[in-house]
Amino acid sequence: MTFGEKLSNLRRERNYTQEQLADILGVSRQSVSKWESDIAYPETEKLIKISKMFECSVDYLLNEGATEKEGTPSSEKAPSFDIKKIFRERKSEKTVMGMPLYHIGRDARGFFAVGVKAKGVFALGLMARGVFSLGLLSLGVLSIGLLSLGAISFGVLAVGLLAVATLALGVFAVGAISVGIISLGALSVGMFSAGALAAGEYIAMGDYAYAMIAIGESLAEGSEYSAVCALDAADTGHICALLDELVPPWFSWAKEIFKFFLY
Image 1 (cartoon, helix red, strand yellow):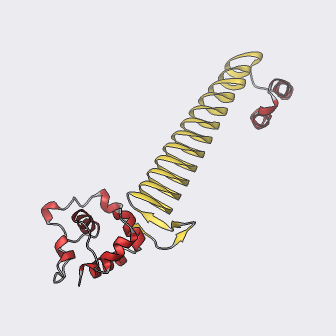
Image 2 (cartoon, rainbow, N blue to C red):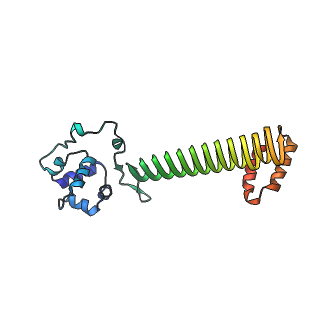
């Protein structure tokens, strides 16, 4: 077989289109087409990259009489536990919203993307970006990761509209240490806070509480109201009236949510 026939067969075995192979090699689709038609040959650098990519020798590619792929000599082979093999380039020809249905590779971009760096609607990787993302560093609408940023975010460190983490920063934050408009945590800081140690702008509830309205089991320091006790119905009604008086209209939504913690 000629070089072009071998390249075409290898490409089809991996389910690549000419455009996808061209993107990986950093050339135009027309160049790949010329190679497969035996009109032109790739440069030495590209030949080496092709041989590594398809796990065959350069001699196999160029020698029409060679029938064995003859991978690299055993002394040069990478260890069997090689991350490059785990993320071997695979990409579907079918597309969704202009992206491959799936893409697995070091830098993966697809509807479903898996890679060291992954970007897609569903993204899984060390660094992941997507509508739904999972990774050590994760960015997405729904984001889960060691360091996570998203509308709904889960992680050791999470930032989002709803953030749940060891350290959580968000509009609604839940964590060992949480900072948010509505904040729940062992150490909680926010406009409306609840936790073992709670500090709030308008109201704080916890073992130790500091806010305009402070409700604590051991200590409560509030500029407008303080209570170190269990609340009865009269106390709850008085606190709700104070919240209505103190909280500005733009935080009324958070006030109404936090009132549920009082009942």
